[in-house]
Each structure stands twice: as C-alpha cells, then as structure tokens.
Image 1 (cartoon, rainbow, N blue to C red):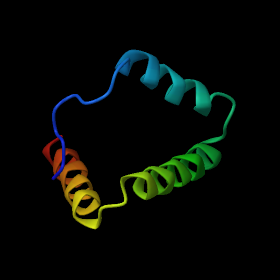
Image 2 (cartoon, rainbow, N blue to C red):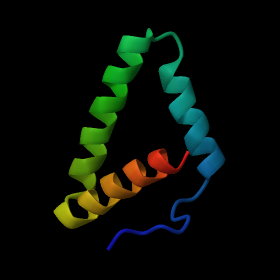
Image 3 (cartoon, rainbow, N blue to C red):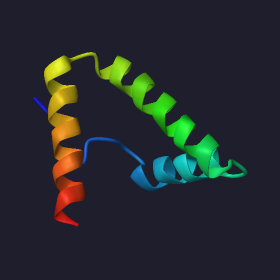
Image 4 (cartoon, one colour):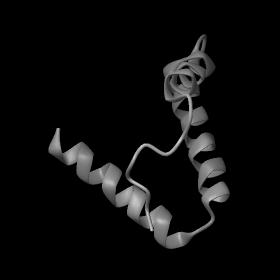
Length: 65
C-alpha cells in the first residue's frame, strides 16, 4: 500500500540534498540523474503495486496542476 502521509525524517534536509546533487549539472545531466535516482528508489521499494500506485499518483498530481 502506498504511504501518502509524510513518512521520512528531516524532509527539509533531504530536499536540500536533492537540490545540491543537481548543482553544476546541465539540464540533460539533471534529467539523467533523476532517472537513475528513480530506478534506484524503485529497486529499494521493490513492490510492483506500490510503484504503480506512486507513478499513478505522480501523474495525477501533474494533471491537476
């Protein structure tokens, strides 16, 4: 089941790490790094149903904006 409530500690520091990881990258390099990060995190999750739910939610949130 997809967890939709805040479920990690230090969210601001985690976001800062993400932003810092993109520093100095071109747009193409940034997109490639995001793709690699997504695949790494999908592997960490490991549950196809949870991944499918997360992808659907991300797409739905994009459509709502």
